[in-house]
Image 1 (cartoon, rainbow, N blue to C red):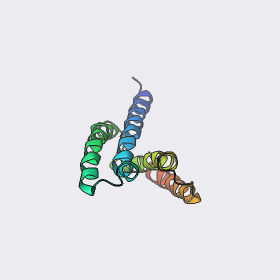
Image 2: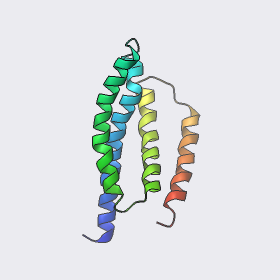
Image 3: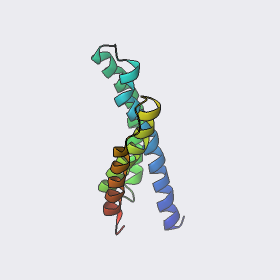
Amino acid sequence: MPATTSYAWITAQTVLLLACSNVFMTFAWYGHLKNMSTAPWYVAAIVSWGIALFEYLLQVPANRIGYQILGVGQLKIMQEVITLTVFVPFSMLYLHTPFKLDYLWAALCMVGAVYFVFRGS
């Protein structure tokens, strides 16, 4: 495989795995606010840990794959951008919170973070 194909393939795998892991993470962290609001916190925590297991089963390989070509800072910023990309629709569609311009401003700040962490790569 040419180096650029390998780079693109590794990046695509990393992004896909991180995106899937973020769906589980978001449900683990925030899903209980809707579904288990009357349950004791420790029940919600145990259920969230169970969901988070699937997050880690995707996130750990994603970071190992990505680390072949990306630095740890790049992986972290990529994760944060994906987190915001998953969280905003989740928040609006699942938790029924209204869209706020603050989400847009946060996304623009992330674009700046991506620029600085990936420049020169």
